[in-house]
Length: 399
Image (cartoon, rainbow, N blue to C red; front, top):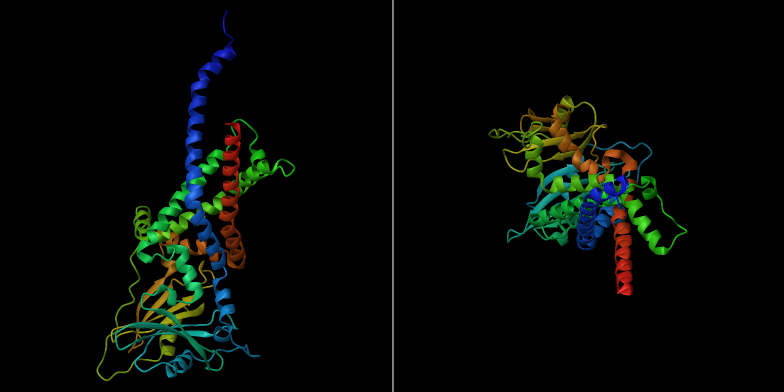
């Protein structure tokens, strides 16, 4: 009896179907393994990232007496020189001023960082908080004691946990490898989500009236595919920042990437005193008339320079700036300029990594978005774990 054309086609396609089923089974095992083990760590990293989306607000709330000030009816800041003078008067003898950070909003204190060494050359780094309207010193705190990561403020410990798991900077590559593994697992999850000849829209729905096992399964699939794109961005930008030298080298293959900005060296002159910080800011204002003063890095040696950062409104990052001016601490001459407007495509790509990862690139909308993204790994892990346990119980009952 001759076989029908459809039976012949079925036999011919059977090996291909078996091969695809085998690939899916292998991918499913990888997805489960990475999810169960690396995913548990990823949950903690995601939760810490969710909190860090509001890191400045949390830090100020926990340290309100230090970091917040009363806003006067006419909020006009005093000069940076007066702020520095107030902070310097409260410092111990021999301490070295390092950086002035201007208030991030009208109700925040200015921050002056300094370093002090003990008799045994043990280094302490402090932050002094100064009212920018009255020059009153609000108080100070230890920002870092030597290499003791736990001496930092709580938010900075949380930041260190987020990208090193408190294993130290030299071991941050472990988190980078974890991010790459999770990234691959997300891509595999999208592949497993793809319907085999069915309606793809069914994979975007949750059948709430079905059994609890089906609801869990639908939640895992739908949340995973809805959030896949943003999770991939978060994972890719996080890994790129951890493996920064490799990232720079890879980007340089497509677009030139320069080295770190060079702000020059001051030329000491016998008997000449350093100019005040206000004069250095005035020199930077001539280069960048717009924007706001974000920070001033203070000279740490006779050949050191002032580095004045003026943040533009259109910069993607709100916690840093790539508009910096190096100023000779004696003559006030501009020695070097970093201007993001002159960046190559590769340098602009690198500039956007952290703002995309932190959500700063999207303004106030970005912070709640990153908070929700940080909760996603927990939901995926819970539903994935419940699905895995449910299938295990079903197999045991069947046997």
